Image 1 (tube, rainbow, N blue to C red):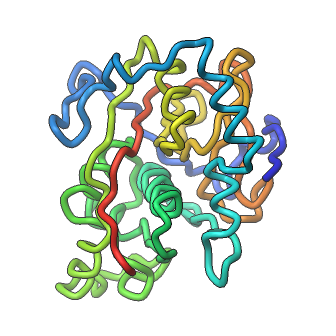
Image 2 (tube, helix red, strand yellow; image 1 turned 30 degrees about the vertical axis):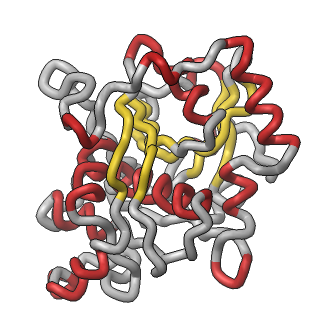
Image 3 (cartoon, helix red, strand yellow; image 1 turned 180 degrees about the horizontal axis):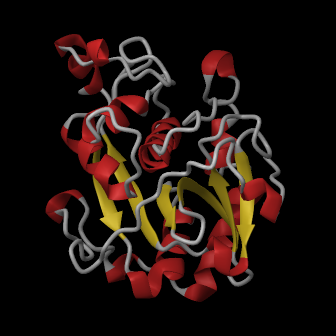
Length: 261
């Protein structure tokens, strides 16, 4: 799957609402979620000489997460991009997108997960921003329902019922790593070389997206998966380059709970 470089005009959302509230690292330091998202282990950092070799191998084999996405959706087609529809819920769509990629990489069947369920419950149905780990915590504890139980873009309170949360339990993201602010790019590269999707918060963009592939470690080129529908860039994906590619905060999804549907 080829993607194109994101230009400044591509950064403008369908509405002015993007939704990221920057994480306060004084109040929420690295590892503040404990066993759910411990600090990224230094022993998992790859050697810089090894990183690009492994990234190139994945791209040559067409085995990166964007490549996997192309064949893991409905009827063997692409997994559709999520669509926050102008709401400030990027922070929960980024983690749900990471979960969709993780499920696909684990050869689990596609399920149409609805991130609005997380945004509505966490924010008490208010159209408010947040940061990535707020939704990760919810995904680990309660999971995410499909659109059959919580329709996409729906804010109806009637969606909040026992059947919805029984379904959500089938789709839990159980363990994440919280990347080090001072070693962010190296650690994200170590994740991308293992096909671990990431939740990327960008303070400069006031936006949270899913990290899907690293093309160039030294040149800093990263493919992201946005939550502005498939109409944005290349089926919802595009490349950030240089300093813009480096996250303000980042979490890697290491394990999810397998489920049939």
